[in-house]
Amino acid sequence: MLIRYKKNLEKIAMGLLSFMPTVKDVKTLQDMIKQYETDPNWHLYLWKDDDDMIGVIGLKVNEEEKQAVIQHLSVSPSHRNQGIGKLLISEIHQQYNQYQICAEEVIDGFYKKCDLEYDSHSK
Image 1 (tube, rainbow, N blue to C red):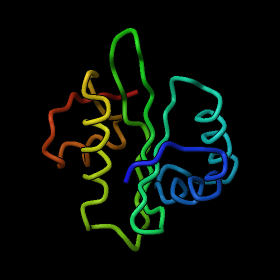
Image 2 (image 1 turned 30 degrees about the vertical axis):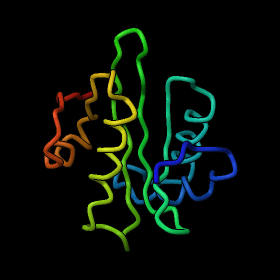
Image 3 (image 1 turned 180 degrees about the horizontal axis):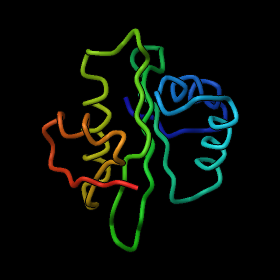
Image 4 (image 1 turned 90 degrees about the horizontal axis):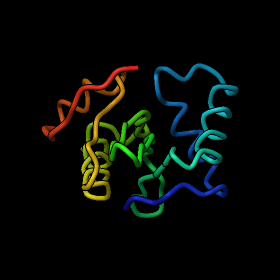
């Protein structure tokens, strides 16, 4: 189940985001979470399976251009290779079905493997 990020989920979200290979330190994580909390165009969601939060996906949304760019995606190592990442992307496609959805370069390889319509996007 996809759940919109709330402040009370901060530690869980930071923990999940820390599994991303591009995140190297706590300061980077804190800055990332602050951006999701303060920027109305940044949307963060967590994936809940039973009672555990096991995945996270973050988007930057451009309302004018009706575009959503997946910029962060991470699944707990103990839940990888079970299709959770693909589920996260699929849910985003359903929720943002009026938007052109694409992925940042670092996620684009995985995004392409999900067999969804996509447009390659890089910074």
